Image 1 (cartoon, rainbow, N blue to C red):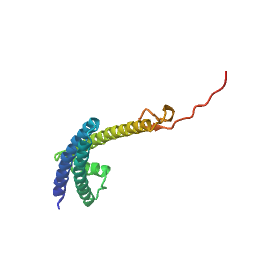
Image 2: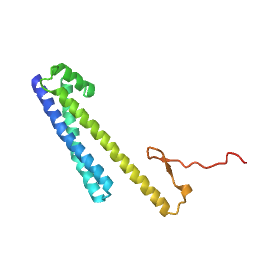
Image 3: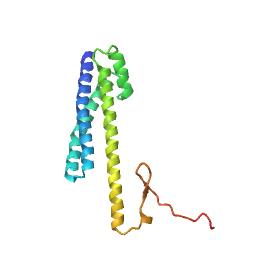
Image 4: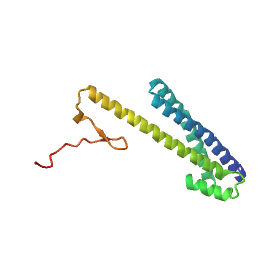
Length: 163
């Protein structure tokens, strides 16, 4: 494969990754809505929809990394940056713009996934508190939470002195 063919192949792979990452971001946003809606069936369906785009992204990124290695570049972010700098310095192929768009979408997916994880954690903790109450735990046995929503160990109260 010639260098030009490699450049066009990487461009096509980046474009495919952008399309799939955009679709994944929409799924993650839908997941947030379903998590807030408390419909277990819809939540399961949304979770199932994430699997294929993730598998597709893994396959395409493996192909992109193989193209980088074939051209003696590391198969990582720095290698992609160097490849773009060396093979499309004037931006005629638009590799820098594609890479930036993909990086931005990837960051948005990561942030959305963290939001969804926070919602799941908060719901799990809320469910645990409700179960503790149903089991007859008194307020002194219920967990308190940090500002991040994580359970905090219950500290025993001690008298600091006597009057």
